[in-house]
Image 1: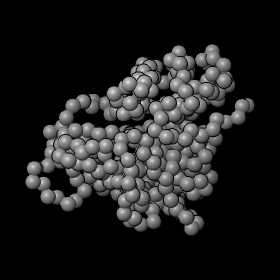
Image 2: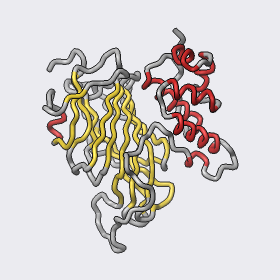
Image 3: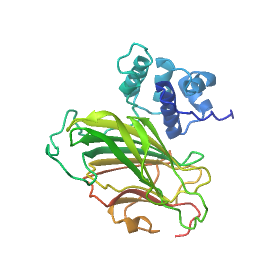
Image 4: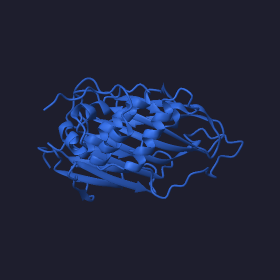
Length: 317
């Protein structure tokens, strides 16, 4: 068995992000580099180089990898072309014109502007000025440390919207008494992050500073990467609790296939207390052959939880 590939350090480069998503696709399919090489007909070095993040792989190599992993060849072909254009120094859009294909938008969404907006003399002071059209999250639990990639589409409801709070709650796992407790939040695309006001130990807030103020009715897409620090245990759940209007949420959790959970429960519109119960009494799910659980939610209520919780292998219940 060959050596594992080095971790890709994301620096805003479309080439590195392209390689990251190719690796993600391979990880979802569960193939080693050797298995993928046999399935594509290319050598192991060629397949490995395609996911190294140093240069953009050729279109034939890319589509062979995608097809072998069961990905959407058409969308990946479009993504490949977007990256090629972004690498052109004369491209007007640059990296901002790249939309990775692993993020599937909710069915039935239409493009264009929305009509909801605040009045011109709006003086509200509560969190407002936008609503969340969709959230798409991929949580990896088969990596050395848990990490989540999240793509959000927000719609401005006030002219001049220039920043949006990005808050994430990371509760301590039951029995965890270690001193440190943290979360690494990094922005993949869609603006820049600024520090927020510290709230409490398990809540981490940043502000997304938009590239330019938005007009009411316009969409904005941003993506963040969330990583639990090494050796920090993660509570066995991932839940979206809307604090403002949120229309659609898709969550994909990739469990370690060598250590699948005993049970996975779907949580839809539950009070916060239910999230921490060992058996919440909600529908039970089973990871597929790749170790993946995929759920979607719509028409969510503000202040209630939507997502998954699970009972880990070896845990009492």
